[in-house]
Image (cartoon, rainbow, N blue to C red; front, top):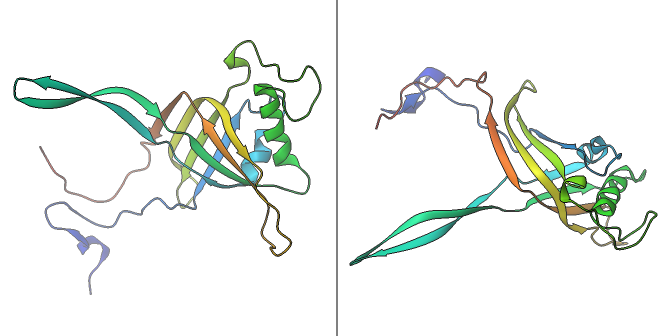
Length: 192
């Protein structure tokens, strides 16, 4: 019978590393919706996408060959799905944020106006990956967030599913922080 210390890949390492699980996470918001509580949105979160980064490809032609260098980068939009609740707490956060970005769907004040600068309506988002003991193993900190698309989805007499709100969130920058206190047990490694 094999033990955990005998499981692995020869020449690479031994032991078993616990994978990060897709259902151990939380998302938190700072400054979303002005005075609205971002916690109400966090509690109703069902799915969230981690950041995705794309670089422009710049072709450089030389004599009889081509090389490619990295150009400007683009952070793709983050997707967030939340369940709408009967108390309207999650919807209130979304509505308050959209009103901050441009007064379109409710509230008071002049319609269709917007803030003078983006920093008055942008918010921050933190996506945390959690380990088995609820410790944070990784964090993504997203800066300069704004809702780019809000979809309240359809209703259906034939369904008992929860009503969900799908959000696409554009952000300016993201930082990934790996928590150094969380150490793996595999040994070995590749030396280049």
